[in-house]
Image (tube, rainbow, N blue to C red; front, side, top):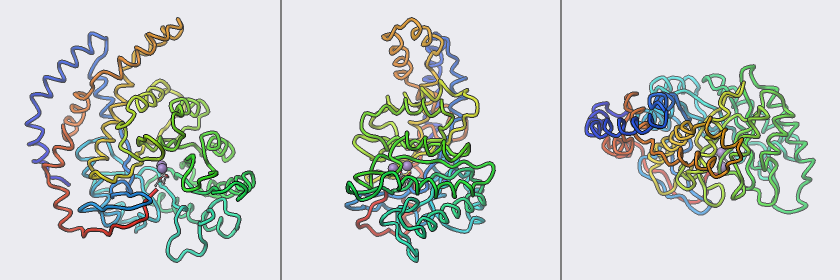
Length: 424
Ligand code: LRH
Ligand code: MN
Ligand code: MN
């Protein structure tokens, strides 16, 4: 972890400005009838999980350009996640990917204790072949035409549940790359039937207090059809499997211009929204830092979440899912966590009584203006204060750079090989 003195020294230099900015914002908000302390308390209560795989440099289908001091394995990844949480106070959990992170659960628990982290949803991987694997996933996994391959994929998911159970996780996210690349290659209906049957076996292996998240994605790696291609299919799956099955929305997994906030609203209405993979994108599954391309879209997603937050039974797993090619992954993850938290606080600022009034009067212009007023409010002092009060950094990136963490770990973590073959 980073030496506390470094964080405190960096905070000390920013303390006076923060106090002035916080007071000024507090005064402005109170003129709007909003208590800044309520918002700061909400910011302090907010958390989003870090994907273990996001701590390394990703890559594309063309190349991977490794960075210095990349994590050598899950223990290093957890160390990085611990630092991200230490600096942001917004990322209390890690989401593991198996088999990438496979290791003795006792060691994972020990590391979680040392870094002050918990575990969010487990992720299974049947979109890659592993050494020593009996059956290849080249033509699919849970929906494969071959029963033995499907059984192997089911077994892997059950194994993920076992590991997760040992470390206190409470959910399994299943994303498969299954689909087809050419019209006629597969029976669209029978492939889906096979998938549902296999997922039923995974569902049957869930502990009582666990949930199963199905994650949809429109395309890639299958380029003609994908088995779980959109939220409609994902909802069908969750409804067919049973009450412990819900849908996971990865923001980058839709066609351009799809209204994601509406999907969010519909899934909550159906009692089937389980969680998110936050990221941002311009074209496809770009896995860019949250809020860096379309911050208003992120805000609108949170606007739905805040509007519906008292829906009975709602319990969302907020997770990030990103890949970093040109930035330091830890810095990118910190930026994302802060942007997601910002969207949450901005959405919490929307005057919902006033908005409802405009809605019932059909005053579209003022309804939109009400959302914009919240979105345009610079809530940075609230985020900074939330961090400072929790012993984190007022400016996480500055404190991270001042700490020299990357250079320190680069000295003990050997450079990893570059080369082709990206991560999805
Ligand atoms: C697929 C995906 C899914 C995987 C992760 C590595 O594109 O979003 O969540 O588990 O990437
Ligand atoms: Mn994802
Ligand atoms: Mn993805």
